[in-house]
Amino acid sequence: MIDFSDPYTQALIIAGIGATLVGGIGGLLTEIGPWYRSLRNPWWKPPDWAFGPIWTTILVLVTIGAAKAWQGAPDAAARQAIVLSFAINGVLNIGWNLCFFKLRRPDWALIEVVFLWLSIVVMILVVQPFSTEAALYDVPYLVWVFIAALLNRKIVHLNQPFGLSETPGA
Image 1 (cartoon, rainbow, N blue to C red):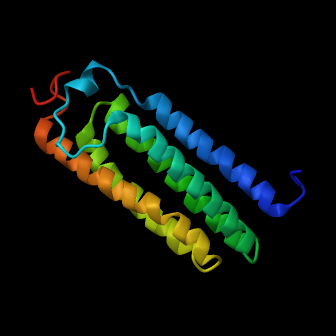
Image 2: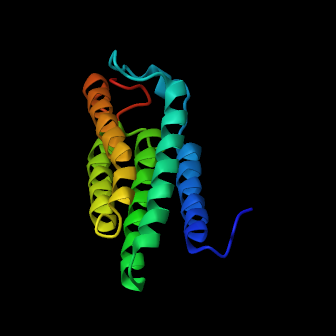
């Protein structure tokens, strides 16, 4: 039986709702259509089907980490810092999808991904004093966004310039 009065359970539910919103909005902005399919990709790009399970795993880990950090936070100010760092990260996560897929500007997404990666570093630094375990839950996210940044960089290199036409590289 789930104890909804337990603060950890409450934090887990709230963090899960936040992660679901970030993943859902990001997914809605992700358009895998002719434009995306026409992009030249490096040989090492993961297959499209792998991105869903990877992001689901990352969002579950981030949710658990957020709840553990909340549980370990000593006061309201610490909890506010946790929420703020995760909220900023969520906005930046969605922003990357907006730039890359909706606006079709991988070059802008490449700039944005730097801020996304830094926001994960900030999340880790914010939660670590309250829970090292919570910080460790965010490490796969940090690594994945680093890999995604490398992929984004290579896609920009292979397809630039952007913004001049609907066809990448034209």
